[in-house]
Amino acid sequence: MSIIKTEEQYQQAVLRTLSIFHAEEGTNEADELALLLLLVKDYEDRIIHLPDISLLDIVRLKMQEKGIIAKDLEAIIGSKGHVSSVLAGRREITLKMAKRLKDYFHLPAEVFFA
Image 1 (tube, helix red, strand yellow):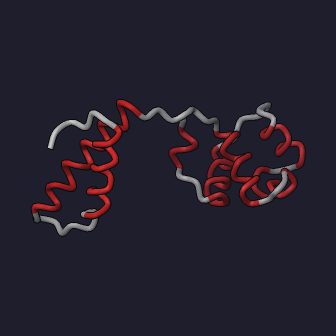
Image 2 (cartoon, helix red, strand yellow):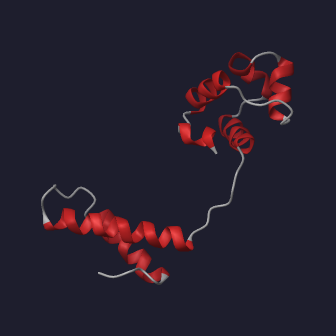
């Protein structure tokens, strides 16, 4: 195995990774899996660049996915005015709001640390 340089090599590595993903610890496949994960991560870090997305964009997207409106967030964020200010970007999301939004939308905590 060597550094992944092409999309084709990347796709092959991903397929192999998925096929041995549940390898038992201490086996040759487990060692191969560990190496493949490093190589795939290296390729993704070098080649694949995800667009930056703001926390508010994530919240709006989750609202759209769940089919909810701003009024539905009042129990999580606070009053109608607070919800409006937060969604417009005029008011910061507090730690308390972040925890409630994380739990409500089932988001990873890392989303709130960007």
